[in-house]
Length: 161
Image 1 (cartoon, rainbow, N blue to C red):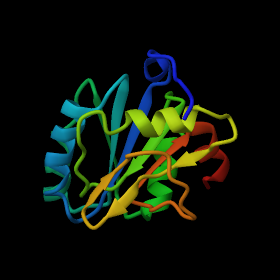
Image 2 (tube, one colour):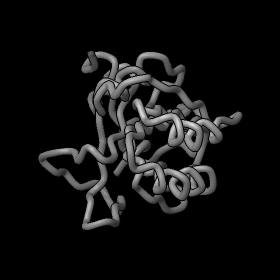
Image 3 (spheres, rainbow, N blue to C red):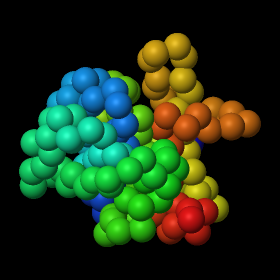
């Protein structure tokens, strides 16, 4: 693997896009993990995808300087809600992440380094094993699991709606 500049990650802020519908309880430990374990500059975007008002209130309280919460009155669908986020973010890289994931320290550093290592790479995903996922080395896998996808924002917008 190529040698990467130490400040590479700080030069490319990461948007973390999370779409929530129904199962809201796993979101809270994920947000705690992200705030504690994400390396470099990042911002979390959470979209409440048409949840009932009681659930929507639980999600809304997460809004802060590092977290933007948006809401649609009806379920837009998983992909459409992520496309909505990708269409508005200023960051040049984005991670589409399921709300029931957990992350380890610096979970985003290696995938971003891989993504940014070559302008022809538009998307990167982790190897997922049962409920634990991780990057250990660059592995070429013929598909990317939809539960965690790192992309250049430009690529996401080109593939979006």
